Amino acid sequence: MKKMIAGLLAALVFLHHGAALADARSAVLIEANTGRVLYEQNAHEALPMASTTKVMTALLAIERGDVTSTVTTGKNAFGVPGTSIYLALGEQLTLEQMLYGLMLSSGNDAAVAIAEHIGGTVPDFCRMMTERAEEIGCENTVFSTPHGLPADGHHTTAWDLALIAREAMKQPLFRQIVSTQRATLPWEGHEYDRVLNNKNKLLATYPGAIGIKTGYTKAAGRCLVFAAERAGLTIIGVVLNCPDWFDRAAGLLDWGFENWQQVTLLSAGETVRTVPVDRSTAESVRVIAAQDVAAPVAVDAWPDLIIDLPDTLPAGIEKGRQVGTASLVDQGQTLVTVPLITADLAPEQTFRFHLTRLTTLWPLAQ
Image 1 (cartoon, rainbow, N blue to C red):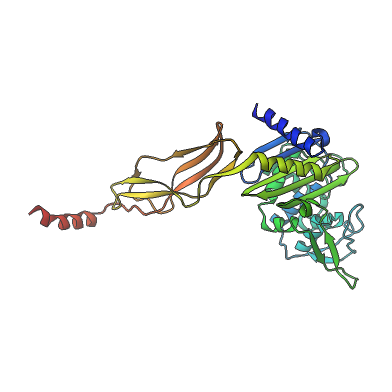
Image 2 (image 1 turned 135 degrees about the horizontal axis):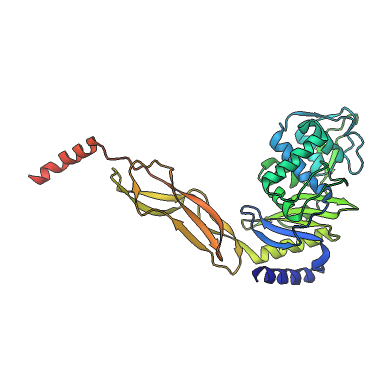
């Protein structure tokens, strides 16, 4: 029922913006930290994804490669069809520079050069891409190319692509690259540098936009992976086969920020409770949240904070030991669970402790 209401509200918003709900073949919105689904439309249909493929190419390169290493343009990368940064045969750039060419200008030549640098061969790199997608939780994604040009069996879903983007946005370098509107790279054989302009128009037009990647082929249509953050809420979205991709993405983000909010029930380091300790030199210890207990909830929702802590703790507890959990629960769904840890020491009572206590109290007994 809640998803049905959300879908109807989304439709009204999109119609208000002049974009019909059916503009995208597939769409999804998730919150970046928890992965909570905020909106979905046909999100699990397997579809071609064009150059949004490069989100995984970049993620794998950052995870497996040394970004300061030198990448040499081989014969397979030279002259790849489609969008290009016009790499010359044998031209060398650092992996980081190649990644800027990959994600800003959507260079297919950069994609092949990166794939061969990391995987040895393009097929081996594509196998690595597919395996990494499975590790992330993608259930219907196969990579046959590192760039997204049409190929047999090359497909994903809006949901899977959102999961991949969420994982990639955990990488500081990836976030830096995809939020950059303009960059320059050395250009071998030229007296001037390459100028790279990001194809993602949302970076210039949508307040709070932070990425991520455009894609287009005739088979896939216009595809867009996008993200924005406001008031502590980071939303990642995907639209596949969407003619009005930027308008639709903006409408989705507007709806997301209007109808969802980030709620923090406990802050990292905040004292949750003071718990007694048995047979310790300390009578009690403070228990604190190890991280923020925060998650996205609907603007009219009242989430619950569930604390799981014992009534007492044994002696010998060290500072920083996990002794319980705190969970944020919204309408029966546990969105986040955070460790609760001790903020103090609780040493065991020793013979010396009892002897000292006895001698201290002895005069009082006279």
